[in-house]
Image (cartoon, rainbow, N blue to C red; front, top):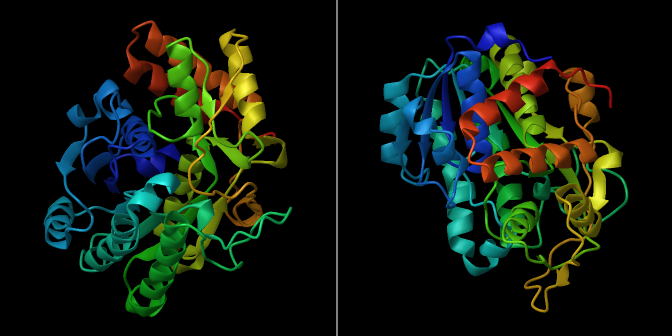
Length: 357
């Protein structure tokens, strides 16, 4: 389990802190008593959890691009963090088809910049680089990918994440090895992350939430696609546990890690939308998008056995519960509640749950 006492007073540098996952992570770290420095571009959506939860008021927030090495170095060296969690990324598959060079530059060279700068900051003892389940060369087999499976990608986004993993491995063996006496580096690969406060375009759950708030049907591209759905707090829990072990035990844990949901949470897009409609209390049908856009893989699954066995990490929420939490969070937003308090309450509730799945 996560050790709250470890995080109290720790200085943590988070890239991509204005995004959906980054905002939740900042809230969690602040709740644990960490001193957080964030480095990111402006929030990628409007509305955004970053603004709703007032994260800029409690985080040392810096606007910057991870592709700008000089700016990144200036901020990271000034912060003198103990731990770096690198989450900044171009995170959308369809966007990557229209903007492949931006995607590769951000996801590959951005990762290289973070690792290159971090090795010159002696205070840093652990670096967690977040990539994606899509880093694997997906042949759509029925069993989960393991950390030793082939990397790759058919689309620019997936390929950029596979390339980022190669960059991480290269820096790890060339500059961060045990004999170098500096930080330990691990990479984290999560499934399809969902949760309250995600307003990104071209993502299933945010698209459904927007349509429900407008009381209109949702356009769906591929209802038969199956994904490893998980609440945003699940992989964040894994990232924090990995950071603890990298910090305390060093290079023994400096390797890639999958953080995926149980098989029961691997459902089709159609199942997810129908369950969200049911929880919201509407009965109108969803609509098939006549312009589905570029191709996407229809099946993807992660094997998280390594994290179960060596980190003690296990999922806490099944998919129906995850969707209930999303609906409850969105209803509170609709009612005009203080979303910082609502989100922190979810974090506190999550921390009290003992994994049973």
